[in-house]
Length: 115
Length: 115
Image 1 (cartoon, rainbow over the protein chains, first blue to last red):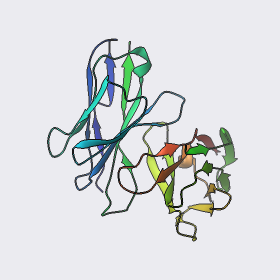
Image 2 (image 1 turned 30 degrees about the horizontal axis):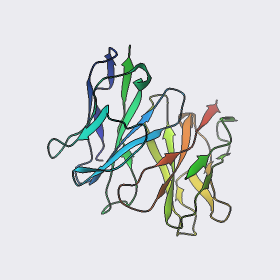
Image 3 (image 1 turned 135 degrees about the vertical axis):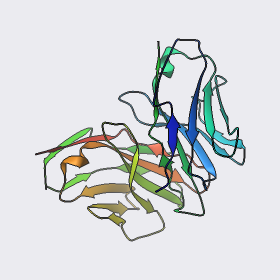
């Protein structure tokens, strides 16, 4: 069964450093998302992406964040200058209108720790 | 704004028992979708079941079923014959419309199945 993959599974970085989180969505999916979950809290929407542009972004997704689909398979989330409060689990998800509609399938997540 | 409320922070039942997790939501929209996701200790988000708001019939997936009460804006999850592997956080989520739409999650219910 196709699945969303994410790399790395864990990342530790120093405050102020740039990080890039990578995702490979399910191959025939057209809609891509990033969510984050601070430890012990609920999952929060960051951004959605369709047709090579951002469809919607949350208040969390400020100028420090950016997303990109650099090729036909990868979908990345970049945090330019990490802060302590960026420590969280980051989930990538994808969905496709042609398949099981409206269902977002999540990757296993990247656990980011900012020191 | 759309909100999702899970009023049970924690629940605990014996193996093989039936357990029901509650979820209510708030929206003025008519076209929306509801989901239950499971998050085991590995923290991966796994889709359990989905429900389209326009369908009156409650969704079922093997031991998992929902009780969808549209007028009451209630969407509870019933797990029958619970198993130790069902131990996880369960998140109710809500999405409006189609395309690149964000999921709005509840705070989650931590379910423990005891042997």
